[in-house]
Length: 65
Image (cartoon, rainbow, N blue to C red):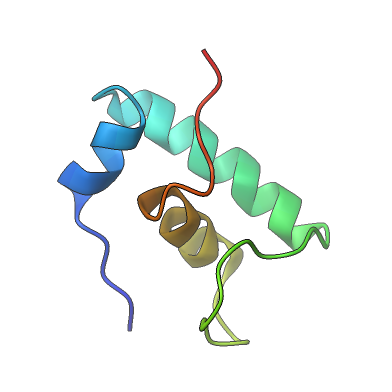
């Protein structure tokens, strides 16, 4: 199971938990619609929300200003 520290993800969204939620939910919807994953080594059964949070924590997805 993958664990991403909240502090690490907040650094990617300018410290805003609300922005983090919006970015993660939008990316999860994109993944659910069939867009390719930007991270490797992830379980095929992983839920879109888990994949989205991992992408954010690794810096593959960023919030628009």
